[in-house]
Length: 84
Image (tube, rainbow, N blue to C red; front, side, top):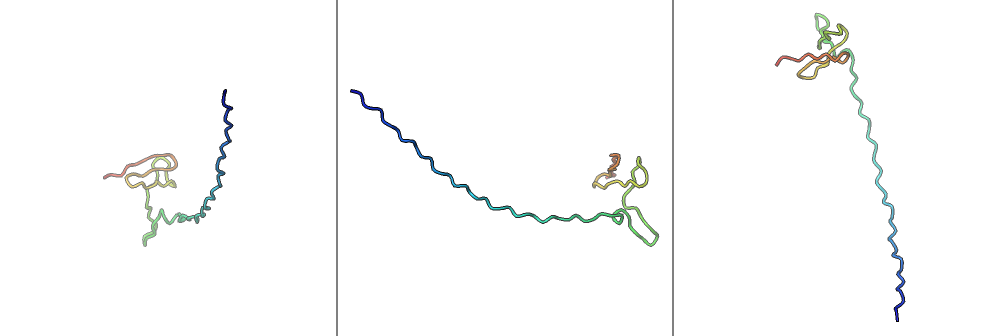
């Protein structure tokens, strides 16, 4: 005589409760200092003095950026290294 097959009960899965994440606070925007012509010139008793050199390729009107060890033109990409 065979035993009747055991009926398995379905396993109940625990119900997952959605976890509420804390809302992120918005950061205040940091305003950059405005750059103007006064950052490229120095006013003396004699007149105006250029603080940075002009680009050798582009000519007057195109200042070169100061990167510590070199000057670089943003218009044409010309780079002039400073002497140590």
